[in-house]
Length: 106
Image (tube, rainbow, N blue to C red):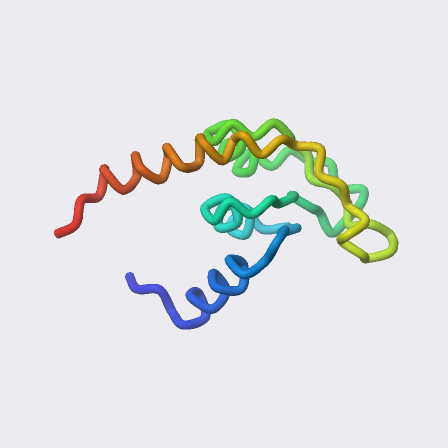
């Protein structure tokens, strides 16, 4: 399976950002891969259900925040504050190395 131009374009857009706020796990993973500070947000302020796929990923890379944050009433994502330390980026780097080693070039 090859990446489509839309996929590459989306990754390039994420990589060009200083910070990311995403409802999508894929957005957070790509942001982590590029060491871009990011927050998991939810569209619905009342949404407090457990999302195991997010928790599973967060645990695998040492992230500490397991709840999404609501989009601010102002819709200004600059109003969000990030209280999570970014030292888990070191774990992300080691995971990238492990994954690359598991799939040697042909």
